[in-house]
Image (tube, rainbow, N blue to C red; front, side, top):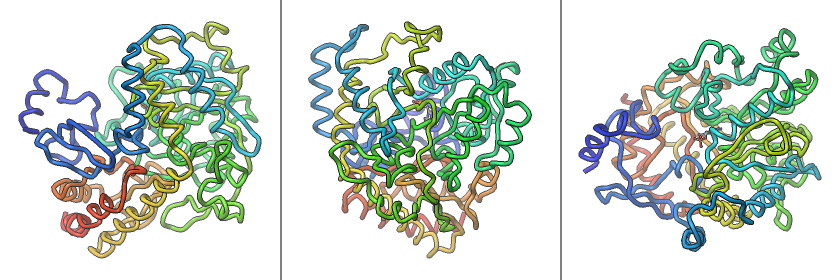
Length: 469
Ligand code: PMP
């Protein structure tokens, strides 16, 4: 039935999919057509159930179809699917986000604008940065993905990496020339770019921790140094937490980076590992064992959110200081709008998800990530497959290389050919992994012992298949 569904889809939808990575191009074979999902499991059109390590590409922090979220969504749907007018839930979600994204008394988000996708959030943040500074250039890092707007596809990760595309047809040379791409984790290259063109740079946009070329954590203190450099030149910093926001901690990656300084929602306990952070051991790094040092609070100017903030519904946001955010229409000259923005059904999914995401949830997600990543690494080692475990908080992936890649060029040099065999052996054994080596693995708070046990059981044969590839 998956074969038939895919064949039928391809007759009416380009490539049979509505987002390229879903097409299994880099792993081969037929994508599974999913029909339901609950907790850590997802079920395809043939009735086959998989332990899901995609988690809707991030949103399913609590697991799929959490009963309280579903109940809230059903109640909201019964009240009306869309109003096209202001609704109190918008303010409620904005307040929840502001409460959570704080550290050491620093509350970098005073106002938010809600949109429907991460792409819209980053696109609007870029326009806002240009409007605020009167400058035109944008700096991004190679391998970072910020959605599919014209200016941000240059050397992007995610599907652009999966399909080995240099960027995208249809983006004009003039637009592409407005984006400067710099190697990730390379402070010297960034300094050089600013020395040359700093007065024309409106903003740097960066993933808070990169997870769209596989996971590649920022080098110790890197984010703070980016903020410092940009601000020296009067440029803004857009920290893209679409993927990391509310997933790696209640205050996102920024909160993790600045923790030890209380990056938690009011009334909750410190994030797991805060003690280690306080002791100066912020172990966010990859399997090389590099350790971050506390960097103190750094303040990006704009944050973008998506995925978890909508709890699985189409909702995303950008936020920052009031003086900047008020430059958006109707208070300011930077235009942005959306028929479905602040959709009442999406809002309650987000609100309920954030409310349920207490420190116990993060502890469970962190624990599941630790167990699954370690078991996978052990299986690969056992099978003699050279690899590194790439970690950023509870996000992880595996690079098939001897040394941990720290930038996109290194990521692309790994033995990526080993992944399809590994992926398909896992899929055949009932574990759904991201269909590309360039994506993070996502666990949820619903990944219990049974689900994790099924993953662990499937690993040895998959690791052997990777070795034989
Ligand atoms: N930024 C980041 C960091 C992302 O990971 C993504 C999506 N994977 C986006 C932006 C774009 O979000 P969306 O797919 O909702 O447009």
